[in-house]
Image 1 (tube, one colour):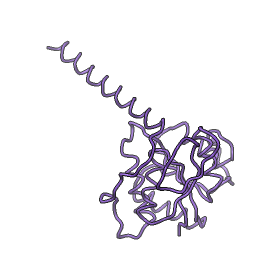
Image 2 (tube, helix red, strand yellow):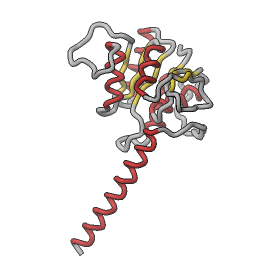
Image 3 (cartoon, helix red, strand yellow):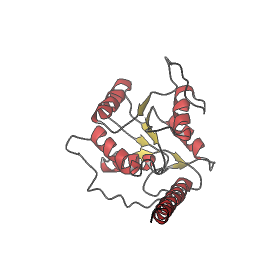
Length: 204
Protein backbone atom coordinates (compact mmCIF):
# COMPACT_ATOMS: atom_id res chain seq x y z
CA UNK A 1 0.00 0.00 0.00
CA UNK A 2 1.29 3.44 -0.93
CA UNK A 3 1.87 5.58 2.16
CA UNK A 4 3.07 8.75 0.45
CA UNK A 5 3.45 9.96 -3.11
CA UNK A 6 6.48 12.11 -3.87
CA UNK A 7 6.70 14.59 -6.72
CA UNK A 8 8.18 17.97 -7.55
CA UNK A 9 5.35 20.11 -8.87
CA UNK A 10 6.20 20.48 -12.53
CA UNK A 11 3.34 20.37 -14.99
CA UNK A 12 2.20 17.97 -16.09
CA UNK A 13 3.01 14.31 -15.27
CA UNK A 14 4.10 15.35 -11.77
CA UNK A 15 0.93 17.29 -11.25
CA UNK A 16 -1.24 14.51 -12.65
CA UNK A 17 0.27 12.21 -10.03
CA UNK A 18 -0.61 14.70 -7.31
CA UNK A 19 -4.18 14.92 -8.55
CA UNK A 20 -4.47 11.14 -8.37
CA UNK A 21 -3.01 11.11 -4.85
CA UNK A 22 -5.48 13.72 -3.69
CA UNK A 23 -8.35 11.80 -5.29
CA UNK A 24 -7.25 8.61 -3.50
CA UNK A 25 -6.48 10.40 -0.20
CA UNK A 26 -2.80 9.46 -0.39
CA UNK A 27 -0.50 11.94 1.43
CA UNK A 28 1.92 13.86 -0.79
CA UNK A 29 5.37 15.28 -0.28
CA UNK A 30 8.56 16.05 -2.16
CA UNK A 31 11.09 18.70 -3.06
CA UNK A 32 10.49 21.62 -5.36
CA UNK A 33 12.56 24.52 -6.69
CA UNK A 34 12.92 27.57 -4.48
CA UNK A 35 10.80 29.94 -6.59
CA UNK A 36 7.80 27.60 -6.90
CA UNK A 37 4.81 27.59 -4.56
CA UNK A 38 2.18 24.85 -4.40
CA UNK A 39 -0.22 25.44 -1.52
CA UNK A 40 -2.17 22.16 -1.67
CA UNK A 41 0.80 19.84 -1.25
CA UNK A 42 3.46 19.43 1.43
CA UNK A 43 6.63 20.42 -0.39
CA UNK A 44 10.13 21.18 0.78
CA UNK A 45 12.09 23.78 -1.13
CA UNK A 46 15.64 23.12 -2.23
CA UNK A 47 18.13 25.95 -2.55
CA UNK A 48 18.14 25.83 -6.33
CA UNK A 49 16.08 27.12 -9.23
CA UNK A 50 17.04 24.17 -11.46
CA UNK A 51 14.34 21.58 -11.78
CA UNK A 52 16.91 18.84 -12.37
CA UNK A 53 18.13 19.31 -8.78
CA UNK A 54 14.54 18.88 -7.62
CA UNK A 55 14.21 15.63 -9.57
CA UNK A 56 17.39 14.21 -8.06
CA UNK A 57 16.27 15.16 -4.55
CA UNK A 58 12.93 13.43 -5.03
CA UNK A 59 14.58 10.26 -6.36
CA UNK A 60 16.91 10.29 -3.33
CA UNK A 61 13.91 10.75 -1.03
CA UNK A 62 11.76 7.98 -2.56
CA UNK A 63 12.01 4.21 -2.17
CA UNK A 64 10.98 3.62 -5.78
CA UNK A 65 10.64 5.52 -9.06
CA UNK A 66 7.77 5.43 -11.57
CA UNK A 67 8.61 7.23 -14.81
CA UNK A 68 6.13 8.12 -17.56
CA UNK A 69 8.21 8.13 -20.74
CA UNK A 70 6.09 8.09 -23.89
CA UNK A 71 8.74 9.58 -26.16
CA UNK A 72 12.36 10.68 -26.10
CA UNK A 73 12.96 13.44 -23.59
CA UNK A 74 16.24 14.86 -22.29
CA UNK A 75 15.17 15.50 -18.68
CA UNK A 76 12.99 12.39 -18.37
CA UNK A 77 15.70 10.15 -19.83
CA UNK A 78 18.39 11.56 -17.54
CA UNK A 79 16.06 11.07 -14.58
CA UNK A 80 15.94 7.39 -15.51
CA UNK A 81 19.73 7.39 -15.68
CA UNK A 82 19.96 8.95 -12.22
CA UNK A 83 17.59 6.37 -10.73
CA UNK A 84 19.77 3.63 -12.19
CA UNK A 85 23.30 4.89 -11.44
CA UNK A 86 22.86 7.97 -9.19
CA UNK A 87 24.47 9.98 -11.96
CA UNK A 88 22.70 12.68 -13.97
CA UNK A 89 23.19 11.16 -17.40
CA UNK A 90 21.36 9.05 -19.96
CA UNK A 91 20.64 5.47 -18.92
CA UNK A 92 23.26 2.86 -19.89
CA UNK A 93 22.68 0.91 -23.09
CA UNK A 94 23.76 -2.37 -21.56
CA UNK A 95 21.62 -4.31 -19.11
CA UNK A 96 22.17 -3.62 -15.42
CA UNK A 97 21.78 -6.10 -12.56
CA UNK A 98 21.47 -3.51 -9.80
CA UNK A 99 20.03 0.02 -9.70
CA UNK A 100 20.29 2.92 -7.28
CA UNK A 101 16.49 2.85 -6.80
CA UNK A 102 13.86 0.37 -8.00
CA UNK A 103 12.46 1.87 -11.19
CA UNK A 104 9.67 1.16 -13.62
CA UNK A 105 9.25 3.05 -16.90
CA UNK A 106 5.68 3.41 -18.19
CA UNK A 107 5.61 3.59 -22.00
CA UNK A 108 1.84 3.86 -22.55
CA UNK A 109 -1.44 4.01 -20.64
CA UNK A 110 -2.62 0.47 -21.35
CA UNK A 111 -4.17 -2.00 -18.92
CA UNK A 112 -1.04 -4.13 -19.28
CA UNK A 113 1.13 -1.28 -18.02
CA UNK A 114 -1.20 -0.72 -15.08
CA UNK A 115 -0.76 -4.36 -14.08
CA UNK A 116 3.01 -4.08 -14.47
CA UNK A 117 3.08 -1.07 -12.14
CA UNK A 118 1.03 -2.97 -9.55
CA UNK A 119 3.48 -5.88 -9.80
CA UNK A 120 6.45 -3.50 -9.51
CA UNK A 121 5.06 -1.93 -6.33
CA UNK A 122 4.31 -5.35 -4.85
CA UNK A 123 7.66 -6.90 -5.77
CA UNK A 124 9.76 -4.11 -4.29
CA UNK A 125 7.37 -3.32 -1.42
CA UNK A 126 7.22 0.32 -2.53
CA UNK A 127 5.69 2.65 0.07
CA UNK A 128 6.87 6.10 -0.99
CA UNK A 129 7.33 6.29 -4.77
CA UNK A 130 8.24 9.37 -6.74
CA UNK A 131 6.45 9.93 -10.05
CA UNK A 132 8.39 11.57 -12.88
CA UNK A 133 7.47 12.28 -16.48
CA UNK A 134 7.12 14.71 -19.33
CA UNK A 135 6.26 18.33 -18.81
CA UNK A 136 3.98 20.30 -21.11
CA UNK A 137 4.48 19.09 -24.66
CA UNK A 138 2.44 19.43 -27.83
CA UNK A 139 3.03 15.73 -28.54
CA UNK A 140 0.73 14.82 -25.65
CA UNK A 141 -1.55 17.69 -24.65
CA UNK A 142 -3.54 15.71 -22.07
CA UNK A 143 -0.58 14.18 -20.18
CA UNK A 144 -1.80 15.54 -16.85
CA UNK A 145 -5.22 13.91 -17.13
CA UNK A 146 -3.82 10.68 -18.59
CA UNK A 147 -1.33 10.23 -15.74
CA UNK A 148 -4.01 11.03 -13.19
CA UNK A 149 -6.47 8.49 -14.62
CA UNK A 150 -3.74 5.86 -14.98
CA UNK A 151 -2.68 6.15 -11.33
CA UNK A 152 -6.23 6.30 -9.99
CA UNK A 153 -7.05 3.07 -11.78
CA UNK A 154 -3.71 1.46 -10.88
CA UNK A 155 -3.48 2.42 -7.22
CA UNK A 156 -7.11 2.80 -6.18
CA UNK A 157 -10.03 0.46 -5.56
CA UNK A 158 -11.59 -0.97 -8.71
CA UNK A 159 -14.68 1.20 -8.36
CA UNK A 160 -12.57 4.31 -8.97
CA UNK A 161 -12.48 4.10 -12.74
CA UNK A 162 -11.91 7.69 -13.86
CA UNK A 163 -11.12 11.19 -12.66
CA UNK A 164 -13.60 12.77 -15.09
CA UNK A 165 -15.73 14.11 -12.23
CA UNK A 166 -12.73 15.42 -10.30
CA UNK A 167 -12.01 19.13 -9.81
CA UNK A 168 -8.67 19.91 -11.46
CA UNK A 169 -8.80 23.61 -10.63
CA UNK A 170 -6.03 23.78 -8.01
CA UNK A 171 -3.99 26.85 -7.15
CA UNK A 172 -0.44 26.36 -8.39
CA UNK A 173 2.10 28.62 -10.00
CA UNK A 174 2.89 28.23 -13.67
CA UNK A 175 6.51 27.51 -14.46
CA UNK A 176 8.87 27.89 -17.39
CA UNK A 177 7.75 24.55 -18.84
CA UNK A 178 4.18 25.80 -19.11
CA UNK A 179 5.37 29.04 -20.68
CA UNK A 180 7.51 27.14 -23.20
CA UNK A 181 4.61 24.85 -24.02
CA UNK A 182 2.27 27.79 -24.63
CA UNK A 183 4.78 29.58 -26.83
CA UNK A 184 5.44 26.43 -28.86
CA UNK A 185 1.72 25.76 -29.21
CA UNK A 186 0.99 29.32 -30.40
CA UNK A 187 3.86 29.28 -32.89
CA UNK A 188 2.77 25.89 -34.21
CA UNK A 189 -0.83 27.08 -34.59
CA UNK A 190 0.28 30.27 -36.36
CA UNK A 191 2.52 28.36 -38.78
CA UNK A 192 -0.26 25.88 -39.58
CA UNK A 193 -2.70 28.71 -40.35
CA UNK A 194 -0.07 30.52 -42.41
CA UNK A 195 0.71 27.44 -44.51
CA UNK A 196 -3.00 26.85 -45.14
CA UNK A 197 -3.36 30.46 -46.25
CA UNK A 198 -0.38 30.18 -48.61
CA UNK A 199 -1.75 26.92 -49.99
CA UNK A 200 -5.15 28.49 -50.58
CA UNK A 201 -3.65 31.54 -52.34
CA UNK A 202 -1.37 29.43 -54.53
CA UNK A 203 -4.02 26.98 -55.74
CA UNK A 204 -6.94 29.43 -56.21
